[in-house]
Image 1 (cartoon, rainbow, N blue to C red):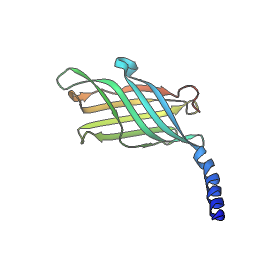
Image 2 (cartoon, rainbow, N blue to C red):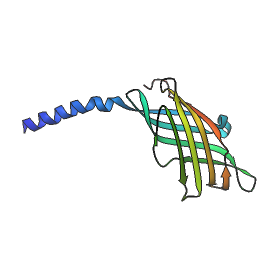
Image 3 (cartoon, rainbow, N blue to C red):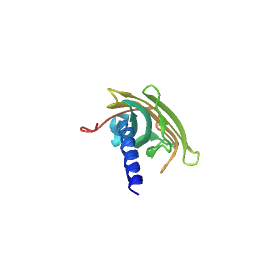
Image 4 (cartoon, rainbow, N blue to C red):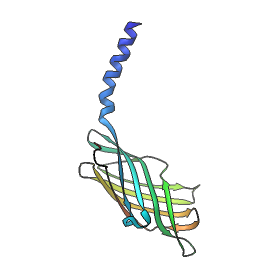
Length: 147
């Protein structure tokens, strides 16, 4: 029994550095210049000093034009993680049972402390059928104190 406990402890100690090397960082920022409080929240995996995955990409209050000519806002989250290659990422996802297409791209800057990119939502949003945000720019950074 003691031998088993020692083996389990050793395995845990050896695994810990691997977990420490794969950090998850969160970024917050504005989209579309912050009009209507539009923003993004992003969670990314950083491993060995390089971004490897965007785990969560959320957007809020991004304004678009509805099919009737009115304006509306869209809020959502991509359903899947996005792979990062050479500090950049791009994804197009169908959402809302295929009625909404979301395209996002971005890149990491300043030793992975900042990000910037583009977002477009086209399709249906609550209260706004046929919404099209056009391509809007977004930027985000880590909160102070996050390593």
